[in-house]
Image (spheres, rainbow, N blue to C red):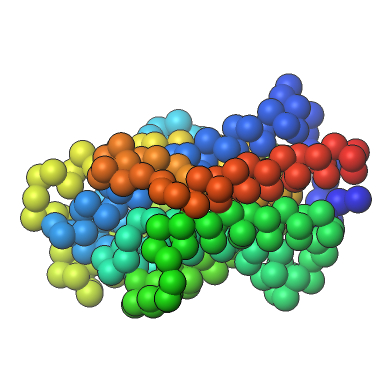
Length: 303
């Protein structure tokens, strides 16, 4: 039984299997996780919206060069869908960047990982979508793993700071973005909608940086290569993969795949900032892998 239903045409045949395309989707949280330490290490020299502008404008340029013909297929309906999806993406990253001013990358990864539970919840509340029991089981197994990753380092009592609240808002908008991509982006319109999403973030972040932060450019030259790397890999490549292949999966299964983002954030945090998983956090990693395996098993049995 399908877990999330839409009145959409059947997917266009693809040379890759569904499992193969979902494996490609696993590259998306890896590339996103790489962006966490790049963002956090840049916040002292540039505001959250300024870095967002540099990152997404760096990612927009190669996408325009590769997909410039997509502009010929623009119409009012695609513009509307691109604006909705891009707005959710803008608020997700605006709150993420803002939150990283106050909180750590490890806590950020855990809270953003709540998206795995928020996707079916928000989908049920706002879009009246129905999730199968196995999807809920995989989602809460992922949540348990994310909890181990968080509490395994920080312990009790839980300390809430402004960054944590901002990350919760970011997680909500990331869940909205996953749902909107699944609802609007199809195999025949992913290219123009991807360009519109990134363009929306660039325009909103540029306006916000000029109004609230007083400028678009960093005070330290070291920020430029970080923004370029985040733009090319964590933005252009990652969102191309998401928009190209998420159509062949489902929102709840995609959210489980994306729940591995904190693991990649921890890995790149260790590589770039000297952070690493500790103690019970490794148990959380095992639970997340188990949740992804459960999602794959439930898909195989439903076909």
